[in-house]
Image (tube, rainbow, N blue to C red; front, side, top):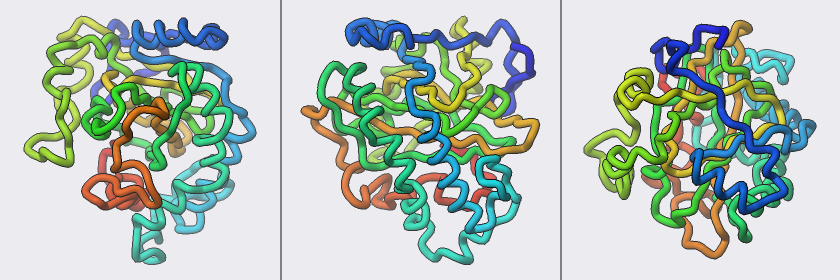
Length: 302
């Protein structure tokens, strides 16, 4: 670790940080992929998505944000203006964000044949993705809170997986996903969150409130990440505790990524995340996620 990385404002000491294992070499062996996912709680696959498609999606998304005054030209650079005309131009912020998340080039990547084929290898069965897509536009200085995905989407298949896709280069200083090593086997912490549904029980937050560095110290484990490039894919289980590194981009650019959820097609599916538009949290659809807010928002984005 060469840079001083941090998560939610907490600097990560060298002994608490480690690199993600890579699993690309297992792509020809579905059983080996499944065993690695069980062992590590994640799969890091390098250069498995078409780079031209990734960059096309990046360009198209940022062009939509240029249209509301949030991103500067050229679109591929992803440089924020610090201002926004989104609320002035769009009365329905959820509808605007749905339009961004349903950008054709993005959907061709996230729900297309390449991703389907990859996930069928990983799950060893025909697959179905959620219709809802979580698009992340992480400003400099921002980060994602640490959480188990289970609490947000646990009404369907137990074999649901998250596909985290960097839409362009995402070095560690730009704040990509950060995993808590071995957290898919923290039985006591998992028991605390298993079955917890954020839409049915709002008595406590869905995310873990303990700072991630203190958690790693307490559990004698490391926080794991890596430098990502366009074409890479990180797959995590519903009980892999994760958040993100702080975006400390030296250039000041937005870290752009998306989360797509895949499951076996034959399994029951969480009704909140399918349909057109999907109901989403509290029936708010795309208006219920942080990305719907103007890019100048001070909210920590989940």
